[in-house]
Every structure is written in C-alpha cells, then in structure tokens.
Length: 275
Image (tube, rainbow, N blue to C red; front, side, top):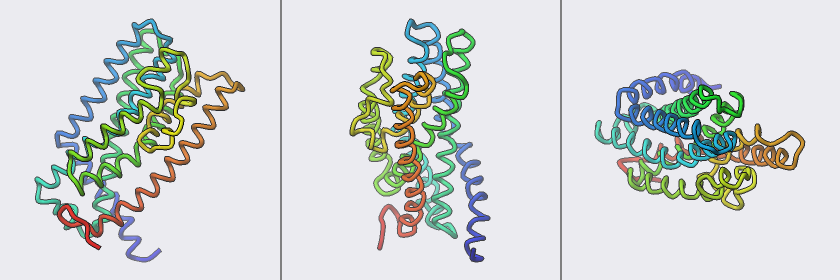
C-alpha cells in the first residue's frame, strides 16, 4: 500500500466522524428520530391489537419499512446536500483536500443514520408486540430483517446523493417516490401478503425484484419470511434462493456504487460535472 493510500485510509474515519457530528446537530437527525419512532410506535400498537396473523404482520411491517427507503434516502440526501449548499456552495465537499474522502464520508454518515433509524423502528415495533404477547418471530429474524433493509438501501443512498448533487433535492425525492411505488408493486402491493397469507417477499416480486429500488423491501421481508416458512418446504427453499440472489446483487451494487461515487465526484463542480 502506498503512503498516499495509507493517509487516505487513516483520515476517512475522521472525516466520517466529522460528518456524523455535524449531521447530528442538524434537522436531519430529528427527521430520522421522528420517522423511526412514529413507524415503530404506530405499527407496533396497531399489530398488537389487530386480528391479523402476527407473523404476517411483522412481514408486512418489514416490507413497509423497506419500501419506504427509496423515498427516505431521497429526502435525507436532498436535505443534506441543501445544507451543504447553504453552508458555502458545497465548498466543504468540493474544497476538501480529497473530494473522494469528503463525499464518501457524507455517504457513510447518511447510511449510518438510516441504519440507526431502521434499528429504532424495528426495535420499538418488536418491543411493543413483545409486551403485548403478540411477537411471533424471534429477535434473530428481526435482526436479519433489519440487516436486509440496510443492505438493500446502500445503493439507494449513493443514487440519491448523486441525484441531489447533480440535479437538486426535488429530483432525488421524485426518484425516491417512484422507487417507493415500485417497491410496493414488487411485493404485490401494500399488505398484500398480510391479506392473502402469501410470502410475497419470496414469491411476489417478478421482474421488479431485479430493480435496486425494490431490494430493501424484499430483503427486509425475507428476514421475517425465513422464520415463517417451515424448514424443508418449497417456501423455505424459495426464501433462501431469493435471499441469496437479492442479497448478492445488493452487495455487488453497493460495492460498485461506493467505488463509482467518489470517482464521479472528483469531476464535479457547482452542480455540473466536467470531463
């Protein structure tokens, strides 16, 4: 490893910590906390009392959180870039000693905040159901569902950040809203599995399952559906196959995005890219 590479590796965590400290004092932190608390409390209270199958209720909730991630990423990335523009025309990013490190730190900070929000939403939901005696899946399934939502969201944050930088907040939010609609369609619609009893994360995607906008909803759902499907059944095989295929695609896409984003940003200036 070269001396330059060692310096870059040593200072990226410091840039990430700086971004996290700055974002924690901004309205973006309040948006994350409010969304996670509202989702977990409202849905937890509903499914603790509703007559639905509690395991399918947890599946529907995981799909809801995952489907919301394209829009969530668009909103928070748009707000973060707007703050950067207001603070000095993106000078904190474009004027940094390493643009690659600066944009990766912002990307990483937003991803970590999104992961924390999902943990809050899943944890509060599970705690409310457990207190009511209605939690039908174990902590391992909840944790796997959270991890799936986070993994499926990684490419979304990179895309939303690039759109926000290049075209502005409204385009990123518009793309996120379209992604939300596609994600719901990929699992047959809002609460389709809850009403039909189907494991729609494994069976309901069709061609839409290949779209990155749908990965968080599918992977989050599959974490729960793996606990629902009886071992050795066709449903269990379908869940494992869908999880392996979608998880691999999401991991490879995340790696590609984390590589492409800083390369692209090196040629970025004041809302435009230059060759």
